[in-house]
Image 1: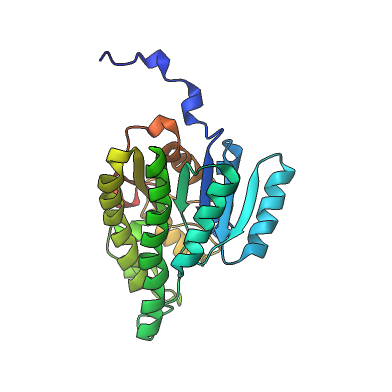
Image 2: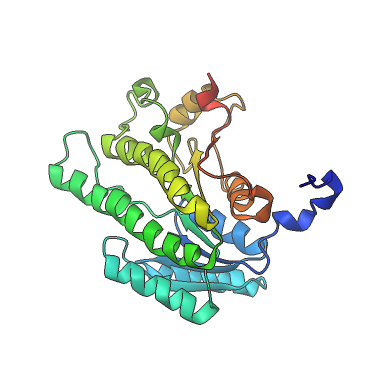
Length: 265
């Protein structure tokens, strides 16, 4: 088979037009920016979380801009709720082309938190992640195509730098490091499982995201990056769209660090 010439790869391959994409947690720190950018890339976007009222606000704002965005309820702790969401999306839109696993529970607040907080985190961020990936992955595999993008973190790639938090009443919490690291290898597992059926699975690992943190922390963190800044709402959408789009048709099992160079040294 002759390889395609470079001119045969159109810009349309970077578009999500005509694709049905589900985004979990579409109103939070990462989710709001992702919702806007994925919708603008042309997808029919379904936002899903327990806080449907917040999602309805986001969906209405995006529809006012001319985009096709919908809000649905899902409890990632409950497989029945996950399956109901999948079946609702397939019934309404005929298929699902992409899943962005962005929802996360941050139940631990300190290292000495009760073990119940750790267990609650795992129920959403480990068991729930697997359940929703399997549910939607199976649906995509049944059609022979699709893309799952897991939103991880550099905290799943490296150990903590506690000096960043000293004296600020902030901390790096163990459950987040644990389940984001697990997400990276679950990504590889699912890529191997679903690849022969035409479904790609990748992970995006963002660096520190500016969310009104203490100025000292922001300055400390920025010095740890090559680009000398934290991420903002414009930094994640492009890589996610690429991984969902046909332009990434030969990319699977990858973990893409989007961190301004934090993990490169």
